[in-house]
Image 1 (spheres, rainbow, N blue to C red):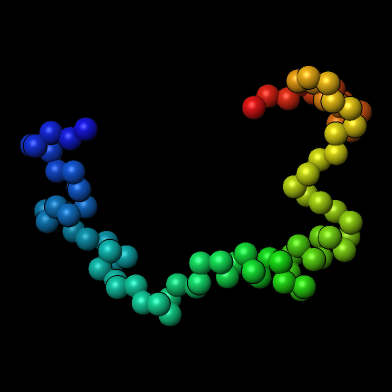
Image 2: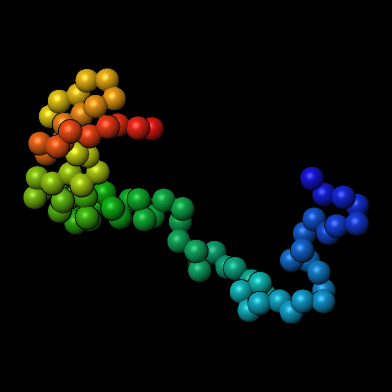
Length: 82
């Protein structure tokens, strides 16, 4: 919560010099489309296709056994939290 004597937007204070980034205007040509990186990842020549061809799935680890909050992964018993 701010009080009336505090500036809620300190970047608008004129006593501090502005950075170069703040003074440059962004143009549409500078910024790639929002989901471009996502689409490149799933392209047939992208990282996902190469990993999948190698039969690797880096985001998932197989659980061999699971009971309650305990699981066995790679032969090690682990406690699952979260």
